[in-house]
Amino acid sequence: MNPFSSAQSGFIDRIDDNLCLDAKLAIGVLEGFIRNEVNKVGFSKAVVALSGGIDSALSLAVAARAMGPGNVLALLMPYRTSSPASRNDAEELVEKLGVQSKIIDVSDMVDAYVNEYELSNIRKGNVMARARMIALYDHSEEFTGLVVGTSNKTELLLGYGTIYGDMASAINPLGDLYKTQVRQISEAMELPESILNKAPSADLWEGQQDEDEIGFTYRDIDRLLYLLIDERWSASEITSSGIELQFVDQLISRVRRNQFKRRPPIIAKISERTIEREFRYPRDWGV
Amino acid sequence: MRLVEIEFRPKKRSDWQVKARLRDVRIGIAQINPVLGDIEANVDKHLEFIRRAVDDKCGLVVFPELSLTGYVLEDLSYDVAVDIKSSAINRLRECSGDVSIIAGFIHHTSDHQFKIASAYFEDGEIVHVHHKVYLVTYGLFDEGRFCAPGDRIRAFNTKFGRQAVLICEDLWHPSSMVIAAGDGADIIHAPAASPGRGVSGSSQQLGSSRTWHDLTRTYSQMFVNYGTFANRVGYEDGINYYGLSQIVGPDGAILAEAPADEECLIAADLTDGALRRARISTPLRRDEKLELTIEELRRIKTERSQ
Image (tube, chains in turn purple, red):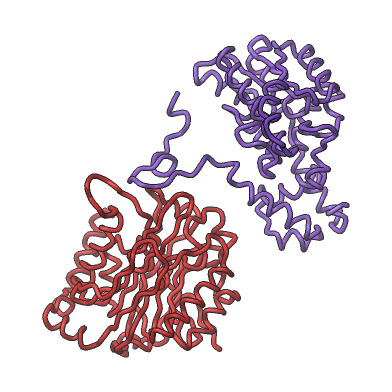
């Protein structure tokens, strides 16, 4: 299904042009961001959970540029069903970048819990993501490195991630880049072909593929999100430009339903000065 | 059905001279919990409370600030904003023959400004729209980031008498009351979305509710008018709106008070007789030196700009 099939090609071209970033400029901002945010809190090192997918690969590559490869630890945390190809890709990248790395098999940790209950794929996937978060933050302490996140803008908007799992990080260089932009910048950074070309997958169970699960391609999702979020188009304006109604409705509802994942927990207001409401210092206040 | 221009202008220059005298009327406050961002659901809720107000023989029912949209809108402001020809507004207009209505919404103006508005519906028409003049952009509030302020405060004639609508923070500036009362309003409404805050020390009352009740009563006494404080209830993003709406007489007496935290309709009977007695016993309006105030303000303005 192509939800843009009735849209004019000029219309789509304009969106694609705007989604296409100057990679050098973007990489410069991301590099400076990581270096600045890590140094600011008194750290000089970074830790990244590396799955072998494109997002964590880009985060790691930018962190290595920002902090120097010796100051970056890549944590590979396979579960026993994780794709061996991804593991190979991850190891290839570690070697290419020259960063430090460690392999932590989370199978026992996950199974200790999972075997107690009958868990659906979703629950099991969430447990895996949160087990990895435990190991990641533990190594942040051990390595004295800040946790650099890997959630991109598309995932964050769709809520396609595990809260307090893969969504957990101290700083996130990718959170304002759509999936297709991650791919574009990764190409500019010359990440290994196998990472650039593989189908996106959370790899939480065998054969899982993001685009099958979400039901649309990242290319189409990003085009729509760009119109909705970046350009503030209304749903009716978008559908009258020939984009399929069902696609638009589904995505808008998904973005709305997952708003809670993008915000800290709400605090019951009692006093005159509530954290996050009237108590609003910048995060940098703390450094 | 006639659509009235939204930029309210007096129908004739002699609007003040034909100031409508207060007619005895029962008025209600619908203390509701709007659904955040869902106008259709909120119109349904309005219709339910409008029916209850009719059953209770009210001539006017007042809804809280942003009653059709909910309050903590942020970027939702742009999505829920409507113009006065929208179907949601028309649905209220259509039932304003049975009971007059004051309801709140984000007004999307023809020049694409977004204003916090309360409209007065009477007999199928909108007779007045007030745009919130004082947007709160401090503390927990962020209205000025999303909305444009109103640029006028006007009293207006209705079939029940001359009234004014100010919205929430407008009342925290006593000059708004000076204008509304000076313009002859005998009933001054305060639709509000006041969050509970200030649970502190041994006080058994929320700090914010205490302030509002002080304001409502003091204003009614000092400007000798009937007043409503139409607050909402419910929770939005952790903020609690406590309710405790009030209808207050021109002597400061509380004529009706809603409970905390519950949706409800409260009502009270307003009479021209009580207003007459209050204006005789406390003739503050008669003695008000409007010219002096204007001259001194003019002087202050000149000196300040020098």
